[in-house]
Image (cartoon, rainbow, N blue to C red; front, side):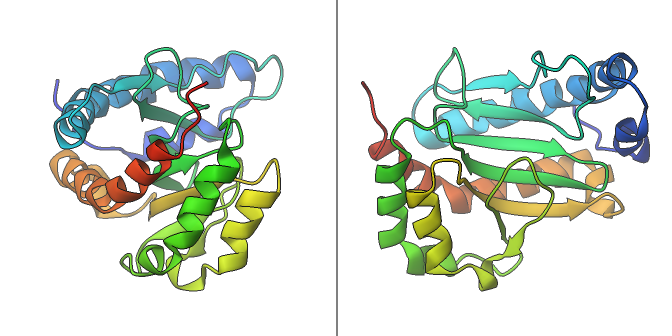
Length: 208
């Protein structure tokens, strides 16, 4: 099936009390949409990158009490997992959708990747001004690309738990989210601009 967009019911999922009830809503409302998005974006990225990539949908399996406050899908070039690899991410909190290139703390050679990005700081700053950066994937907060400072990348390099996610946010009321085709086009346009930085991260990746 084709992706038809997100609706308010998807965002209201994160107001449901209780782990089991919220997980059931995530599984029935949101995860099928991730499958629809993934079927198109995986093929798109594979063609752009010239290698196979794989869809991973967050299972939230480690949770035993607290219900998740967000959920996501990831696309990486590793079939078994994504957290230890540079990856692309799409997901939502209760008030916005995020589209990321994600470099999170599990990366085995985060320091080398950060060093490479530091050398490309000026290129990162030239991304469109509607791009944003997150320094912690667990938090909603982001900073505008215009407000990104070199010290943020240096912190990503120097602090073990520091992260670097770059992409775009769309508020839950944005009409774009209700139009599946326009949203998918926006994802592709966003990733087109991020692929060069993804490839830089891959080149710096630890293959041990």
